[in-house]
Image (cartoon, rainbow, N blue to C red; front, side):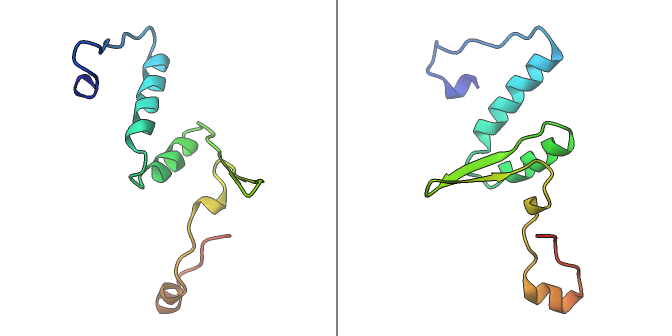
Length: 92
């Protein structure tokens, strides 16, 4: 992080507990994964570990919520793949 801050303004972190260190690491990871199409997988992994991250979006004054560990976290498999392989479709 020293290279991302203006020279002379970075203050190194000091941690009192492992939990505090983990929280700061996850916050920094969230910043780093923004707009890289990797945050989705990170949220799924963290939810399996019990972090219970839900996604909320408001579109045209309608609120949409994706609850932690919802089957809707899995994208549908394309129909041509289902036809070719006989694979079962992800729940919707």
